[in-house]
Length: 141
Image (cartoon, rainbow, N blue to C red; front, side, top):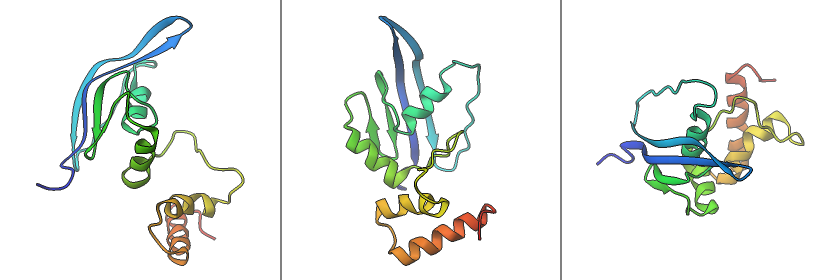
């Protein structure tokens, strides 16, 4: 069995936000399966739940009900935040609509930070890889 054939499995996911004392449903019973190599696009009206679903799949939020499995790790309302952080660090990449850089760090340091946290490369290789990545998007020196 290839590792992580089903990259994402969403099963009957519901997400409800409290607005005062009222519950507002952002997601109602969403189910889907994304296999390795598939290209998926979410589209819909404003307030339709797209961001809520992406935040749950991206482990930034948890479902109110239902489960999401991302590359073998199940996310539900009881999943410890430390497990979600580990999954984000080792398996996920996120490009936000608005950049979320740490203002006290340079662009190079912001790119290098996830590699440092993961311990994936020695410092000299991290720096070289980060410079290469910045150059690839037209931000080299």
